[in-house]
Length: 492
Image 1 (tube, one colour):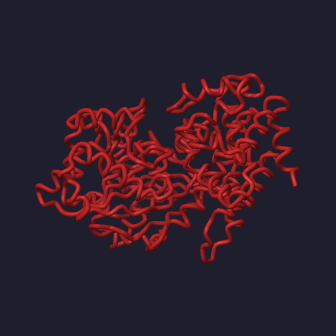
Image 2: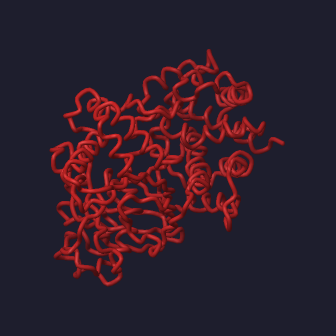
Image 3: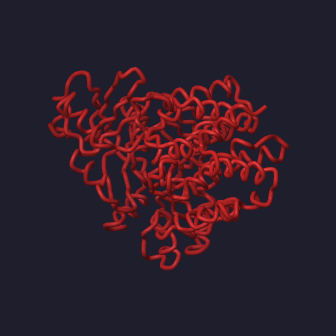
């Protein structure tokens, strides 16, 4: 039975389905980047809201920028925008919900005009983004917009009529909103970036200065850029997820989503054209997101980076296997307690050390089967945002950075391209060639990797970091990952 509007009410009773009238929904949000995380998180919260009167006007219209192999757009179009979301508990229990908040989809790679028209529609009050940490064209060291390294942004900077990047599409739509009087609009980032609202604004302003400077005063008067903290482990879809739905419920879903039970969204209350009443469905709408952002980025995302390279080098496949490894687990506890929590601001009612331990419990869920290879991807976008800011805070306070230095050394060893069993590593990173070339010099020049200053800035010349980094890299080369983990967890 293929998932669609016509089959919704033929599903088994233990599958939760939309009870609202989907034919009467108005999309007030256009979301760019409808991947698995957006569908387990923001779209899920909006689905909850649409079950209430407060949901009127807040359905989602999806946009993809690039077609990459198997296309979510095609899958959703064939299912009337519906998809299943299955939460997996550590004990094996599952709960499946059909999400109905996405009511349409456009692919900019096919034709940018429908996307621009949708973004410029007066009904569109929020443009939201999950475009990955590296999708903003921001230099990781300076924090300024350059667009360098993103071929779509570079194409639109060279030819503002190419309409290939999210920035090109949004700026074209904003010009149209200005001309038509469509009104104010909010740009809301849902990516794992500290101060993601500020980053989104920097990207938009930097791009606009280059291609449409006459629009800057309108943006200043008519737009807001709320920051948010988002959190939910959501692995990519695999065939086993489709098979589970077919075998358990008799449902054919081309692109289902699975996730952990935990979810959190902390959102700054800063909207230019109104907002959905998300606080009624479990979202923390607050005046200041920064303390929550830092907590999540350093205790959750930072922990992911801290475990993935060591796990991969040891030949492990999944995150939960790395969490179960005693040496990795002990190293993570030291990272949390000694190098992450000390950099965080207190949050009323939150035990930061306890929150970190909850992260380990969540990541240890064997049901999720989150691949270490996924966490290791795009490291040059992640480490500068999730780990290095904490390193700099620790150094400024003359506190230890041994674990973080070892994590970066683990990345450098991983980027050499083989694990400790001699098996090849498929290094996937936008700076792949540069990083693998630098890593190839590790043994003859132990700081060659840190010399990639676009990522590390002056850390290679900062002995308080470079010293423990060299020591960790040497141990990885001479004694291996297990010995390094032992040294980290037995040190005074």
